[in-house]
Image 1 (cartoon, helix red, strand yellow):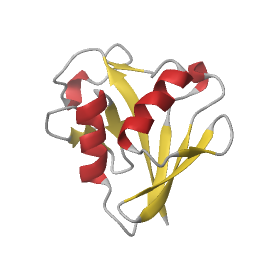
Image 2: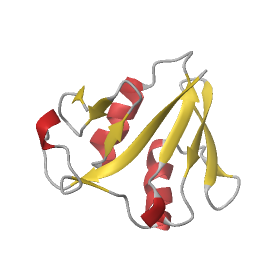
Image 3: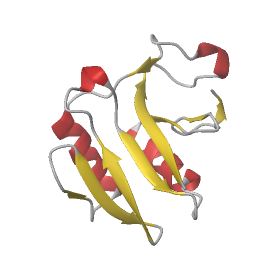
Image 4: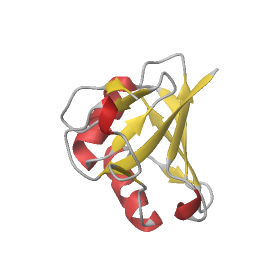
Length: 117
């Protein structure tokens, strides 16, 4: 079994459940910029192709996927359910200023509490 996190950028912070909308949850832009940001939090990240990358985090492999055209989607991270990646994803959000949504669904925001999405 696997879990997927989707990443976005906030228009403003902090956010709450009632404030989630296309005006406050914005797509990430710039594939090269996204890759540079990910290299900061996952230094062993290896891009297998232009849109698929693999890294080892918390002792387990995970995958990042970027759509070829960011207007068609956003960055996704797929990981094993054997490990709770929530604290690591929260630190990624804190460092990069991104939002993350998991499958529960919860929204993780930079330097703030997670909340139901």
